[in-house]
Length: 114
Image (cartoon, rainbow, N blue to C red; front, side, top):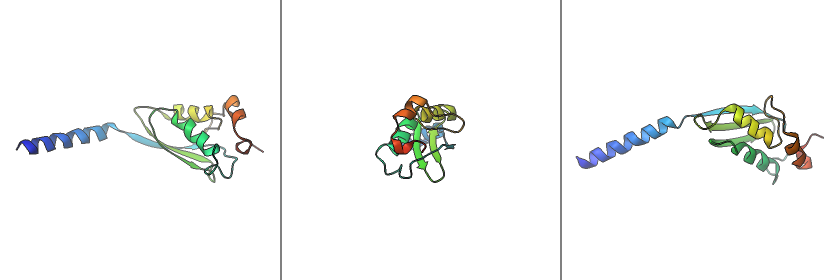
């Protein structure tokens, strides 16, 4: 009986934790000039690092063909505007938020508009 109680408590605890872990996914429109950003040492890394500066980011997927960044995040830790601002601070447009000029200037030549 004691084992059953412990298992029941552990199950309830894990269900409670997963219920508090609310995640959402957003797709952010950007402009990716590099045709090799996922293989490039700096392009994809810049986007990934910049996006992850926002707390609560679970997953970042870059789609250079569609010019989008798909971000899965915890709703209790961040919000879409914070994520957009983090991407803009990394030097890339994020929906209606333009890239920070100083960060854009630091990007490799292949990441900038021709």
